[in-house]
Image (cartoon, one colour):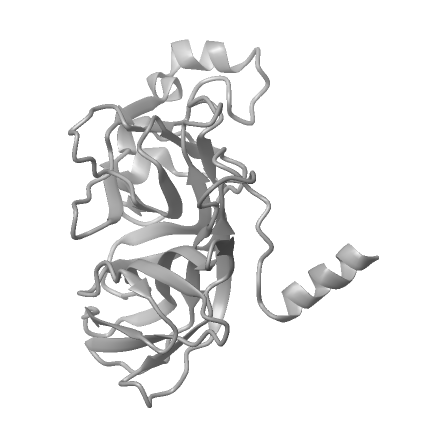
Length: 323
């Protein structure tokens, strides 16, 4: 009964209780999927890494989001990537106010919060995550946001970066299918967790008209991924349509792998790009040769990099019109 009351209070307050670990146990979920004539714009802006934000201190970022003339926004979010959220040495959720157009501008409404942690009692077991916010329909090409730590108990947090995603419809563009997945799965091959468990999966449901596909572009966002002062290799891995892990019966997939090369899947290492100043790692891959007709999925694996997968966007662009 007590846990039910606590959970209810958390949900009313818009807080997602953390029940994760360094293993891939909080997979991203599809929040948008549509066939449209258009594309998307992802802008990281000029905010960068904040350092520790004390109560009453702020963070400012500006974005350019110039969309094609005549386009219509179908889905748009502001993403705030935060880490080391704590009150002294105790994990706590960040308390922040986000406004547009200056510190006295209108408050933004949060649509989702995703958080993860080590999952066991140890030193520095703080929360890390991503908040997703709704944006006003301003129609402006530039947008400035102000983030303020509004905690009343002395809690602090770090902002690793911010970004705006705009999915738009444009009548003169080619037909596309666009999937947008959000989440916050913290991955680290350490503390007894092998790489196979430090792996998270993202599914892109639905059928794909393979003969008409012109391109298939996968875009991933993972704070802390892709940067090492030691210049080590093989720190992270992307696996696409790995044989034996799809929705088909186990006896069917081996035959399909022989008959159809695309069913053999594909893997890449060191896919994320980041540096000391830009600590939100991103990855971009053309995956058209390896698509399946349905049940496409990816797995993202840590091999000593330490990162949190937060966004996955797949855009499949078609030639001509559907029959």
